[in-house]
Amino acid sequence: MSRLGNLGQRLYDGKSSIDFVGKRKTWYVVSTCILIVAIGSLLIRGLNLGIEFRGGADFSLPNASCSVEQARAVAEAKTGAQSIVTVTGNGTVRVQTEPITTAESAEVASALSKTCSVPVDQIKIQVVGPTWGSEISKKAIQGLIVFIILVTLFMSIYFEWRMAVAGLIALAHDLIITVGLYSLFGLEVTPATVIGILTILGYSLYDTVVVFDKVKENTANISGQSVLTYSEAANLAVNQTLIRSINTSIVALLPVLAIIVVGAGLLGAGTLLDLAVALAIGMAAGAYSSIFVATPFLAQLKEKQPSMIALTKRVQARRAQAQKKVEDGGTEEFDANGHAITTLVDAGVRAQPKKLPRSKRPKK
Image (cartoon, rainbow, N blue to C red; front, top):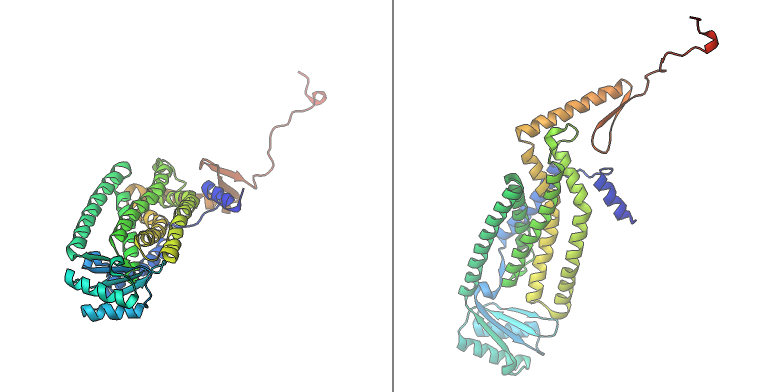
């Protein structure tokens, strides 16, 4: 068995443990710092919206002989506004301008044709109005609201409302980080990006539900024992699903990263790349939040319940009693089912009555 397999088995058996829940304040600080950077970038820099959202014209020039600077100069001279020029992996020059009329787009195409030595009939022109992007945004927000309502109902019925709240906190965490990184690195937000973001919300929820399901299993009858607190049982669940979460995330990320490499290196920026970048960021954030945010926050909510407070006191009292036994010369261990095993080390020699030999027994 590989070392990773051995580690996974030891984490599952509870022989090794990483204190994810107990050190929740550390993870909260890390997440808060990331969220501050993401929100700050959104407030200061904003999002680099594609022409589908802000409106404009898109010219694609295959096998163009001009440079980026030449194409930009021609487009800005004709439109009187700034233009965005990129080169895709197959040598196609893509020029995006501000909203223009159909007649103006014909003039820009003609000028680019001369400068870049591309026949006018081979230039692909796409003129998009800003209302199209706003319609997509409206439908995306509607879909997001319906998604959140269904998620809340499902998790509240299958688990409980505290798990629904913790799951939604993790979802918001992943959403803000993903959108914030788009703002921070100036990545273009297109309709494909919106689809990618909605997709990662489902992936983030899936990862969280897997961990919560194990937490539910570990804490099914937790009030009837005095060995583990709720936080410790939840932390055991995270450790038991840790290797599974890592393996799932790696397997899911590999094809997405391959798409990014192929999309960026061979095909250039496009719909495939926009979708893959959102998926990659969201998957990584979702795997992180299910371990470091959702479960610790759930344990924090549960520990405020009166029954869990009483359980914590019983566990602490039992451990204090066990410690006293150890100090008195005994040892306290627990079997595989959590039952206490007490052993007295200095109990002394057993004084059982001895039976006399037959020859020394008094005659009756």
